Image (cartoon, rainbow, N blue to C red; front, top):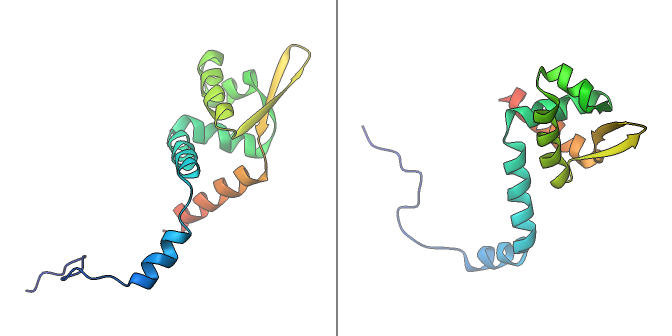
Length: 119
C-alpha cells in the first residue's frame, strides 16, 4: 500500500501567488492581537461567561449563580475578557453589569459555534 503524503514531493513555488499573498498578510500588531484574543477565548469558563452574556446583561452575582462559581473567580475571568475587549461593563448603584462588548464578539461566538456544530 502506497503511503499518501501531505506535503509537496518537490520544493517549488508560484512566485506570483506568493507575492500576492505576502502583500495581504496582516501587520504584526494585528497578528499579535488576534492570537491573544484566541488565547483568551481558549478557556471553558470564559466561553461559558460569554454564552451567558450573549443571552442577557448580568451582574457579577448573577454570573456567579449561573456558573456556580465564587464572585471573585467570576470577576477574575471578567477582567481577562474586559482586557481583551470582549465584554464591557456599566455601574448601576453598587452593582456592576456586564455585557458583550459589541456585535463583532457575538458574531465571532456564533460563527465558532456554527463551525463546531457543523463538524
